[in-house]
Image (cartoon, rainbow over all chains, first blue to last red; front, side, top):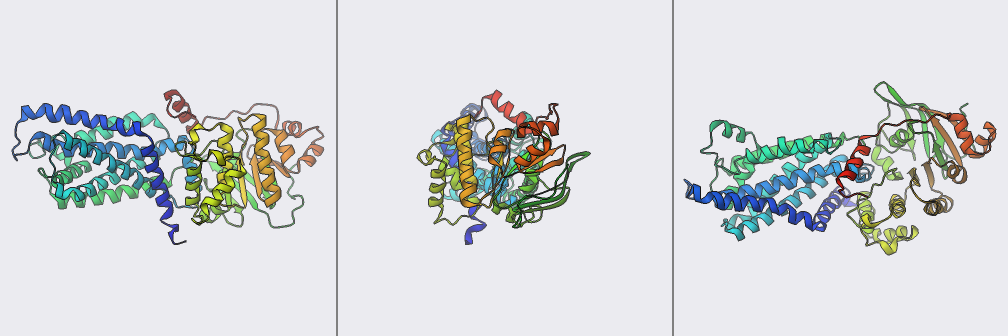
Length: 253
Length: 277
């Protein structure tokens, strides 16, 4: 029985994956938004902005930001699914199982993060079809960063879901957390030339470092550089897993 | 008139509760209750809404920590050694706790994985239990296509998958038609008789408690007010049935229970039309 610690993790991971691939409408549906952003902003603004200062077109600059956006959305919602599990009762089944709450939280988070990463890869493929030209040699590190961003925000979603009693706060999270995280991250505009206030906000937004890491690896301009990106992302991910696990362990049914 | 001596209690009890108390702020949900559930018994835990039944079950099944008192579930203290206690019981909750988006088999497989069943044995065990509740031919169906009765049977099969010593059933037959209720009790009785499984159940159907229990405890306002066999309780209260005895002891007024946050969620879920059961 060597697998007693890791097997439950795998089982909970597998559950998230199965649920994801079973809901085709969800996969297709969640591709709509990134596609719109790519087409409307990417193609729409490209003409107006012309070539960027670094010789990178706006579409080329935007694509990694949109990939990060789709990961952010999918990851946060995977985490928030804890609320649905609570409503439909499945959470209780896991909470009375002889598995620590930390393992349950980690298994779910890794499952949700895998799903979000997969979503990110789909958007990458769509972006390539739409004309994005990434640095294919660094695609593996790019996927690693996608996964890191995904874990970070799934853990955040789990943490939030652990304190929310029901879906009442859902709009609040959308408008005051998810949207600001996306719009104030440098996913849509270069931080180099942004006003100081906007730049300051982006500096405390973990997504900025995720977007930057994707830009660095997928071959457009980087603002912080990979070392800073990696350090910040790893630290914030660990912190969010810690907070998420703590709050999840305090869920009362 | 609380009775402390449990009838025909020869072996060590399967569940023992001593001076158990649970307070939520100023409100005392469970007040210094004590009872023993003998091994192999079918124990009916009865009480009006809000009497403390579910709170007690939650403490026994490690979902809530007691404020004070001693608990033993198959020899383990659920508050101190939750993982140990969890291995020894199976539970069917009042509300469904299946993953609707997975198949019957997948729900069972997930449970086996969480409980660390040996993997070589898992498929055989799953088949055995699904056959026991007559759902083997539906093993590949998504649970969301199941009726209420089928879900309940699947939950019983799942609760038994890891061969627990004790099975908790919180209102296992609520909302089911008489045929299905009868069906479910046939399984439970069979397990109780053939495998010596201890069954701890709550129900609002007094005739079920009368018919299927070997022991009865009645809880009201956080206190145990009777603990005996159904027969003795009826005799002592000088009534005709357990239902009459129950009403005589707990009074006629209707108990109000506030909707929990989960109930509110369910309501919203229905309104949104998302994944309704």
